[in-house]
Image 1 (cartoon, rainbow, N blue to C red):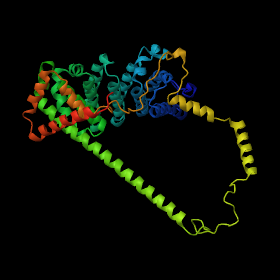
Image 2: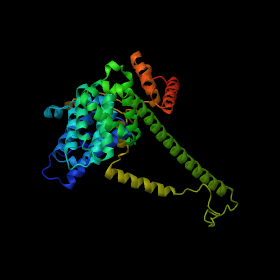
Image 3: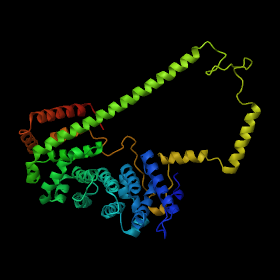
Image 4: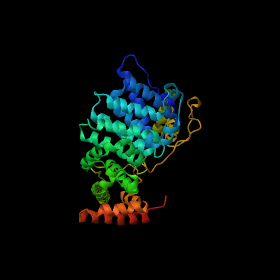
Length: 423
């Protein structure tokens, strides 16, 4: 069982003392550690979202990075709990968890004292939210798009701008038609100009993947389903898809190379250690230790390191310590088992008694399960005939190397889809 008594959040302190700040951040950090390492959110932890919302708006906006990281984990590892669990505190504020999180991000982005590097963490949390709640949050997609567009023009740092773009990319991936409608037909041209100008600035793998998925989504639709401007730039969309495929491939190769190098270093160290042990065992100087010191010859090999009397003294000391401080081994084991998927005790008054959290040990990001080549190939292969013809027409004016890259991507996508295990 995860005891909620150790997660007491101070609310509305009259003075921001170091003690109060430390207590609050300690609780937020512990929740983050539990959810990250367990890849699971104990249902009773959802009752702390309203408290975090209240504290954040009251005095903790300076800690937007810490709050965003914790909420991101909770949303990613249990989107169903995030959307479904409502406590008495939610009722008091008249807001769902989703509305509270959106309000917190809006507050952070509007505050001029919060640095753009800190605001980026709040925006990334919204990426995860949108990608984790596919098909569940249609009414709020326009709000996410509007929030990004509002701050995109004033963004100074490239990384902040890229993540604001990635929020809209996530909305396009969620539902292209909803997102396009939210952007507005008059804003499509300036938006795509900014987007395409910053494609190369998508440095992180997750940023590149969501940009690729968003662009591929347009290939699913017939020309009659999309605004005229998007149909006009289909060739540019294909070109940017190729750019992103190359960037993703380069990152993955670098990661594989790094892992191979680290593995090689581990093998070398292992070989050195084994050689040292073998050299020592083969040494004829049986009467000397590794430092050349003479060992006493009258010590039998099976001599106890600690005498039986010494063992009894140690046990007596341990017993006395346990009587003073308690034996916490059994309790700690139970707590660890609870955090990682055991049984939980629920606070019935908080409305979580009927909910079971979701566990997925194999996924660290909503996009991890997506193969970029398979996704591209599937988007076109499953599109209606008019959309497939529009894809072919858009590829005609492209340079030969882009066409060749697209052909390779489709062949690779078919091969990977055929060899992938069935889900």
